[in-house]
Image 1 (cartoon, rainbow, N blue to C red):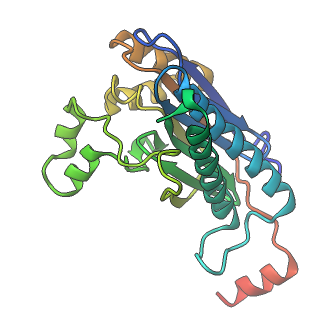
Image 2 (image 1 turned 135 degrees about the vertical axis):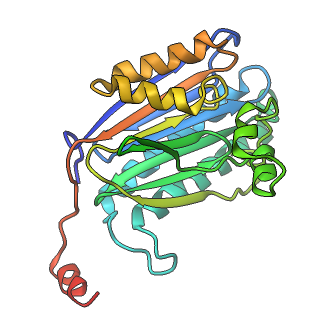
Image 3 (image 1 turned 90 degrees about the vertical axis):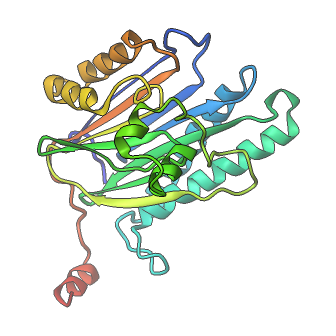
Length: 274
């Protein structure tokens, strides 16, 4: 399934106003509807290495699997679409390679990265994430964060110690509880969502929401959504105008038309009895 012309994409990454180099990495494959964003961490340039490995591995493995497998199929063990399993397994593989690299290369010791990735198929989107890089969706004029951060602050919110509003203002937002490359294995959170025409999806590193309130992100997308390129530029500019204390990466996808998968004969017969 080639999604070119059915979904519009835009992406932008920026070093920000404080950091000396950019440890974020981003990658898109418009044909299979894939976006991958990673926010690296570690001494020297190790964060760049970790995020670069994550994006390269996930984009390559997802593209290879998309060519040989029917992504719309349902996995009998998990009940998820096959593409969700593809995405999850690619992130698992990236974690393994980053961990092994950190163990074998002295200059990469202690490196890791967050990741958020999404892939579109059959009027659905699969989202996999580890850490505090986020996914948002704008639908019907409402902006919703559709991933929950793997962070100490989010755990405190979940336990009732903070409200969502208090968390938004907290200065202790960057203590992640999960990241790629830190341990030999990692728990990858995967969810699927139905997609509607005109939906806009935003992936971002924490350099955006740490600087810009969700209300202002919402207003920017609504105001400039005639051009996703302009939206990405405006979001990065907003973050920089608020101090740009971290690298800032944004990736946007707008659904232009339906992309339902063609059912084979067995699939059609099965759907009659659902």
